[in-house]
Image (cartoon, rainbow, N blue to C red; front, side, top):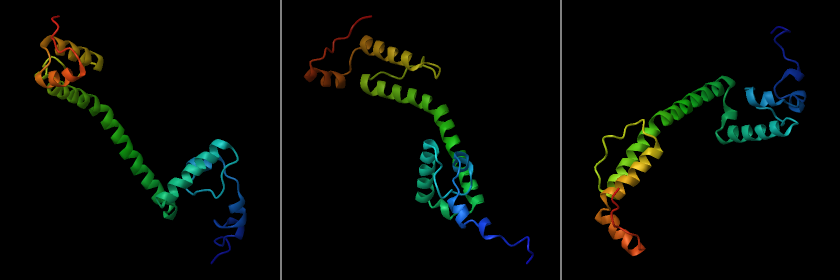
Length: 156
């Protein structure tokens, strides 16, 4: 074993100087190894506490640095795909659910004039105008009578 390969006690990961070192917020956010102590500022200490909580809850402290990096990369990729999917799919699905609820509540066939570019406000105004123009169906009329609501259709 060469002299260059031998680490001094102060260079060891578990040495007293390493343990006493005060990390920066950058170390807490981007360091692959979890610092032993929190940074002196409040934001860094808060982020350090959250990182300690995540690493101990999911046993990330037992992983090697490259395994942590791979796991964080995979989780960020999956989260990005989920958010992108929700952004692209959810508005269309919301309009589908709105048409389904309109059919169940008013008994009207889904309108073919509503497209995916219709805004929620336009859909709601069409829902209200169709409901009053066509009148209430029997289910809504049965629910409205005990509440004292008018079930008479209004001609527009």
